Image (tube, rainbow, N blue to C red; front, side, top):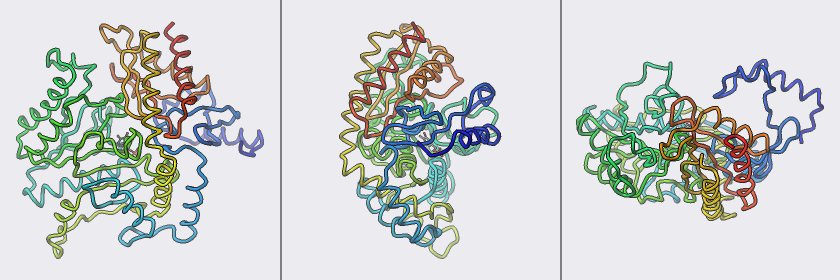
Length: 464
Ligand code: PMP
């Protein structure tokens, strides 16, 4: 534990209460309870201000700390880099920037260029801007629309929310940016709401992708420039696309000459047991964005990665002020990001964490499925790698979403037991009812069993 006296710690808590605006939090609850301060972390575990130990099943709350806490080799790499050269705008280059780009591209056949930024939202904005600029440069501005999917999330800015498929996040922030058009989700479990009849497996997968084509035809194929998708939807409820989906998406992308932008902010850098989520599906994107796991939260870094073909499109008129991508991200020039990312990637390789992620992911999903035999409230378990969700329903046959207050009570009960799990976003029926799990890629079988044992106990207490 940190060497703060109890008085020092009370001062920290009071300063938090007085001055911190916590993320995603209705602050009323802090009028009656203390904010929880996370003081220290090691491996899969963190300790709060009371010295209480928590097993972290969500990698820092938002699927970020892929290699776990307390990694001295990353801290040392960052320190060494910072004392040598901490920052220069990415108009010029840096040693860790070049090295990490080379290592990253080696994991992404077909991709070629890395644009550094500092958050997932910002990386997505960069891709949207390139897509718009390509529409201007190649298609006279006509192919300006970008398709996005119901239940996907791409970030917090107004443009990203305009491409956001979770309506409850958008309330009261409008008006939004024009040119983003929604396509239906691909969650077979909730297919009955979509009016396509009783389809399952590959039939459903292809139908859900056909729905993208229907939107393109309704909008006018000449006006649609790109399709932006999460490989596996994260905060929208861990939606693993059904068989046949991605194959049909690839056909549609080709047929309508779309740019394919894959948002790997959550799935990227090992979370699903491959380096990138799209690599499970044999698809070839034009843009890949990533952030959270790139440096596991040891430094802020995001990357917008694209192909040499896209890069070439921006090179053909060097004398024209529109002849290049006139964009910048100040903190894309922080060298701490790529220095941390290089060591983060080296750890994943050295410790064979992709294999561990795949094996432990199977155990996690298997354990949750076993719990579903005991607890009728678990409607469906979904996941790939150490990235899983358990959708809770109050009536299995009708698939009625479980009451939001009870879902929150399960999360709170696990917290009480010393296990941190998550739940999908609040406020919309059918949206707020999935328990989320994304332990670090270093999780052991004992960690996984402890996580699911806590869920077992919590479900028993909350749902009886
Ligand atoms: N894309 C996805 C899929 C995400 O889950 C998130 C963050 N939860 C973002 C983008 C935005 O990333 P950031 O919060 O770093 O801006």
